[in-house]
Length: 208
Image: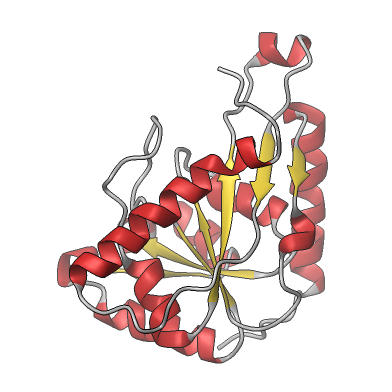
């Protein structure tokens, strides 16, 4: 496993994308202080864009190890995902090897990034949340850090002063006595609702 400490290369990468995000997207992040400085952590975010892993890295000041579907690891994108410290998940085979790898990273104290929706969605929360984040939290004892990424304003919206906003919520502790597919599913749906509720918790409504 690579070092979970934030390397100079990663710090420079994160600084660069934050600067670019502020200039072109008006990026502003809320709640970064909610991020635990150490210990196993599952970072769970909504997902609507290809570059959402980068946006989450902008919002969360921990180095994150990402789970990504194996279909993304093709030229030329595979180098980008390897740079983000991502590892492939074979969803056709159930992803058991990837889950074992994820549990190893959490046991080492990593922050693990995951999208509970499983794939990119362009609408609000659904009842289609995957239970992987919950299962990992139950089996590892890691807390879940919810993150919401707002819509990216277009050029005209930027001229009107709209900004790309990201919200980091307080860590969530999952009951480690949860058992069974239905219990996992209900907890996953509740996690997704909490993610989408973050803008309101911060007193800011989404700009449509």
